[in-house]
Length: 386
Image (cartoon, rainbow, N blue to C red):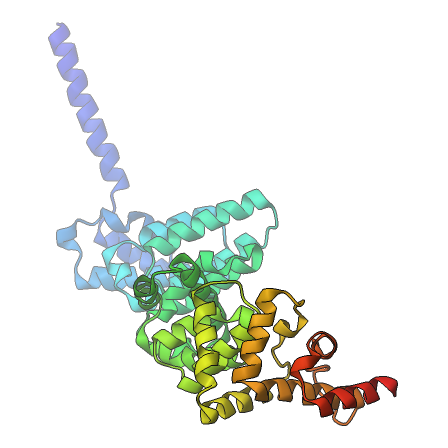
């Protein structure tokens, strides 16, 4: 009797399960009706009910159409709930939608709006959740370069630390259209930070420094940003451009004159003992033997709005005496340039758009007068009296 009851219950349970399953499984005709009704939510909830062997071209066309329509509806209603995010992320992994460029483009546009809205809530805990969702989405996305740039700006504008979001910018710097995208100022700014970061990370390893530059930016991108890097290198203060000098020199983007100017600036900054200090010292010695090279360096330094000369601010210690003596013996023209410019500014003979071009002028004349032209010393006293 128990066997009979158990058997009957099993049959009933099996029949009930099959019947219940049949009620909830849609066929192709059901999906066709839902497409006509433009009921995207129900259609997409049951789109996977169709067996793989029955997913014909007609089925795939319906799926593509309803996927796009669903995104359009969400955008039209400005529906940016977490449940929407989870659902879109799920269906975007379906092979038919994953390979549909139109759907993926619209999906990216929706996600851009979704995260803009998500981060508009200023609460820290909520922002952290948004960032986790964004990272999850990006990991599974098609890494659209423009979207990556948008995300990098969105995250860095809230948290700073541009290099932390390089993964989003690299979608642009490594893309097939990097020669276009790397012209954008935002990509350039992130790239400068990236170069600085890698230069510090591989401080004494040029090979790995260059390898990681190549992993971060392709050649087309680098060719677009080199002119900007060179321009900034020539304008920046010496203490702020070591990383640029390193990259540009290793990539043979600097002339011999540019290199001489840089090491002369290093020498004039009174650097601490280092490999770079030694190179700067040797550069001054070589310039002492090459008048033409000195004149090229002098002309380029003369064009700067602020003449380098921290060395002139030094006290009369042994190190500064040695540096100044070496400069006087090998590059006296620069001392003359600095002195003349100083006198021109102090006397008002010339107006300098960026203010005093020789901030260490007084110290040079007072502490190191023995190195200067006597005519300049007399002129300095005259200007002081006036």
